[in-house]
Length: 152
Image (cartoon, rainbow, N blue to C red):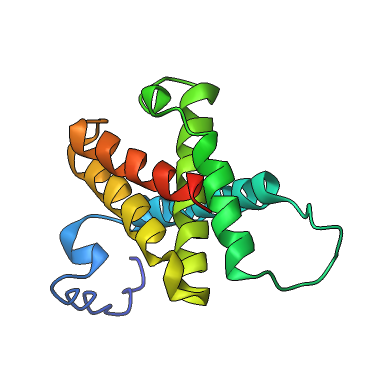
Protein backbone atom coordinates (compact mmCIF):
# COMPACT_ATOMS: atom_id res chain seq x y z
CA UNK A 1 0.00 0.00 0.00
CA UNK A 2 1.19 3.49 -0.86
CA UNK A 3 1.60 6.19 1.78
CA UNK A 4 -1.11 8.81 1.60
CA UNK A 5 -0.14 12.15 0.01
CA UNK A 6 -0.68 15.31 2.06
CA UNK A 7 -3.71 17.42 1.08
CA UNK A 8 -2.94 20.41 -1.16
CA UNK A 9 -5.53 23.14 -1.29
CA UNK A 10 -6.44 24.43 -4.76
CA UNK A 11 -4.89 27.73 -5.84
CA UNK A 12 -7.05 30.76 -5.01
CA UNK A 13 -8.83 32.30 -8.00
CA UNK A 14 -7.13 35.22 -9.74
CA UNK A 15 -8.64 38.65 -9.17
CA UNK A 16 -10.77 39.94 -12.06
CA UNK A 17 -8.80 41.91 -14.63
CA UNK A 18 -5.50 40.18 -13.87
CA UNK A 19 -3.56 38.66 -16.77
CA UNK A 20 -4.09 35.17 -15.33
CA UNK A 21 -7.86 35.71 -15.09
CA UNK A 22 -8.20 37.07 -18.61
CA UNK A 23 -5.84 34.56 -20.16
CA UNK A 24 -3.86 37.39 -21.74
CA UNK A 25 -0.31 38.33 -20.96
CA UNK A 26 1.22 41.74 -20.82
CA UNK A 27 3.74 40.82 -23.51
CA UNK A 28 2.11 42.76 -26.37
CA UNK A 29 1.76 45.84 -24.16
CA UNK A 30 5.42 45.68 -23.13
CA UNK A 31 6.51 45.19 -26.74
CA UNK A 32 4.40 48.17 -27.88
CA UNK A 33 5.92 50.30 -25.13
CA UNK A 34 9.45 49.31 -26.11
CA UNK A 35 8.78 49.98 -29.79
CA UNK A 36 7.43 53.42 -28.87
CA UNK A 37 10.53 54.21 -26.85
CA UNK A 38 12.83 53.10 -29.68
CA UNK A 39 10.94 55.16 -32.27
CA UNK A 40 10.87 58.19 -29.98
CA UNK A 41 14.59 57.87 -29.29
CA UNK A 42 15.29 57.56 -33.00
CA UNK A 43 13.28 60.72 -33.69
CA UNK A 44 15.28 62.64 -31.08
CA UNK A 45 18.52 61.26 -32.52
CA UNK A 46 17.46 62.26 -36.02
CA UNK A 47 16.63 65.75 -34.80
CA UNK A 48 20.05 66.07 -33.21
CA UNK A 49 21.74 64.75 -36.34
CA UNK A 50 19.80 67.12 -38.56
CA UNK A 51 20.42 70.22 -36.50
CA UNK A 52 24.06 69.65 -35.49
CA UNK A 53 26.14 72.41 -33.94
CA UNK A 54 26.88 74.83 -36.78
CA UNK A 55 27.46 77.87 -34.59
CA UNK A 56 31.07 77.02 -33.84
CA UNK A 57 30.37 76.89 -30.12
CA UNK A 58 29.99 73.81 -28.02
CA UNK A 59 27.67 75.06 -25.32
CA UNK A 60 25.12 72.72 -23.84
CA UNK A 61 22.17 75.03 -24.27
CA UNK A 62 20.67 76.36 -27.44
CA UNK A 63 18.48 79.31 -28.05
CA UNK A 64 14.88 79.26 -29.18
CA UNK A 65 16.10 80.77 -32.45
CA UNK A 66 18.46 77.81 -32.93
CA UNK A 67 15.57 75.43 -32.30
CA UNK A 68 13.38 77.29 -34.80
CA UNK A 69 16.15 77.17 -37.41
CA UNK A 70 16.58 73.47 -36.74
CA UNK A 71 12.85 72.93 -37.16
CA UNK A 72 12.94 74.83 -40.44
CA UNK A 73 15.97 72.87 -41.66
CA UNK A 74 14.23 69.61 -40.81
CA UNK A 75 11.04 70.80 -42.46
CA UNK A 76 12.97 71.75 -45.59
CA UNK A 77 14.09 68.13 -45.83
CA UNK A 78 10.56 66.78 -45.46
CA UNK A 79 9.10 65.33 -48.64
CA UNK A 80 5.52 64.66 -47.64
CA UNK A 81 4.93 62.64 -50.80
CA UNK A 82 7.17 59.97 -49.24
CA UNK A 83 5.28 59.66 -45.94
CA UNK A 84 3.62 56.46 -47.12
CA UNK A 85 6.68 55.10 -48.94
CA UNK A 86 8.02 51.77 -47.79
CA UNK A 87 11.53 51.46 -46.44
CA UNK A 88 14.14 54.10 -45.72
CA UNK A 89 12.61 56.90 -47.80
CA UNK A 90 9.38 56.80 -45.81
CA UNK A 91 11.19 56.47 -42.49
CA UNK A 92 13.46 59.41 -43.28
CA UNK A 93 10.53 61.64 -44.23
CA UNK A 94 8.67 60.78 -41.03
CA UNK A 95 11.76 61.21 -38.80
CA UNK A 96 12.41 64.64 -40.29
CA UNK A 97 8.77 65.57 -39.79
CA UNK A 98 8.96 64.39 -36.16
CA UNK A 99 12.20 66.34 -35.70
CA UNK A 100 10.59 69.50 -37.10
CA UNK A 101 7.64 69.01 -34.75
CA UNK A 102 9.84 68.59 -31.67
CA UNK A 103 12.17 71.47 -32.48
CA UNK A 104 9.31 73.85 -33.33
CA UNK A 105 7.72 72.99 -29.97
CA UNK A 106 11.04 73.61 -28.22
CA UNK A 107 11.41 76.95 -29.97
CA UNK A 108 7.90 78.00 -28.92
CA UNK A 109 8.60 76.91 -25.35
CA UNK A 110 11.71 79.09 -25.31
CA UNK A 111 10.19 82.11 -27.06
CA UNK A 112 6.50 82.65 -27.65
CA UNK A 113 7.19 84.42 -30.95
CA UNK A 114 7.79 80.95 -32.46
CA UNK A 115 4.33 79.69 -31.48
CA UNK A 116 2.87 80.19 -34.99
CA UNK A 117 5.55 77.87 -36.38
CA UNK A 118 4.94 75.27 -33.67
CA UNK A 119 1.17 75.47 -34.15
CA UNK A 120 1.38 75.05 -37.93
CA UNK A 121 3.67 72.02 -37.68
CA UNK A 122 1.54 70.60 -34.86
CA UNK A 123 -1.69 70.99 -36.85
CA UNK A 124 -0.08 69.28 -39.86
CA UNK A 125 1.15 66.43 -37.66
CA UNK A 126 -2.17 66.01 -35.86
CA UNK A 127 -4.12 65.98 -39.12
CA UNK A 128 -1.74 63.42 -40.64
CA UNK A 129 -2.21 61.16 -37.61
CA UNK A 130 -5.99 61.47 -37.97
CA UNK A 131 -6.31 60.63 -41.66
CA UNK A 132 -3.06 58.69 -42.27
CA UNK A 133 -2.44 60.58 -45.49
CA UNK A 134 -1.27 63.94 -46.74
CA UNK A 135 -4.50 65.70 -47.58
CA UNK A 136 -5.18 69.34 -48.45
CA UNK A 137 -5.22 70.41 -44.80
CA UNK A 138 -1.82 68.82 -44.09
CA UNK A 139 -0.40 70.50 -47.21
CA UNK A 140 -1.89 73.86 -46.16
CA UNK A 141 -0.33 73.71 -42.68
CA UNK A 142 3.05 72.59 -44.04
CA UNK A 143 2.96 75.48 -46.53
CA UNK A 144 2.12 77.86 -43.69
CA UNK A 145 5.04 76.51 -41.61
CA UNK A 146 7.40 76.81 -44.56
CA UNK A 147 6.24 80.38 -45.12
CA UNK A 148 7.02 81.20 -41.50
CA UNK A 149 10.44 79.60 -41.95
CA UNK A 150 11.10 81.75 -45.02
CA UNK A 151 10.58 84.85 -42.85
CA UNK A 152 13.02 83.77 -40.12
